Length: 80
Image (cartoon, one colour):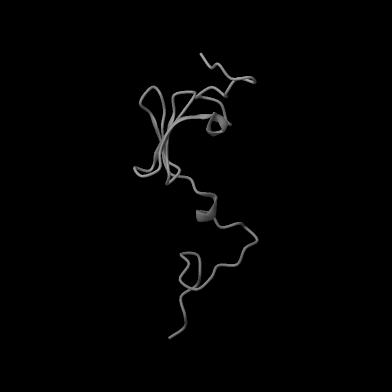
């Protein structure tokens, strides 16, 4: 049970990453949140029941209106 006011989001809530950090080990790349989630620096998560959430960095996503840059998987190959 969370002792914080307001209480931290539950592990199954959409905003679960907003829970307070109770243990942090940046040298190992992980932190334990109040709701029992272990969050990793690559943004992956280990949920209390053992389920995992794949890394989901917002910088890894390309917006629909954003042009694909050179070397991007969505960029067309140069003409030979």
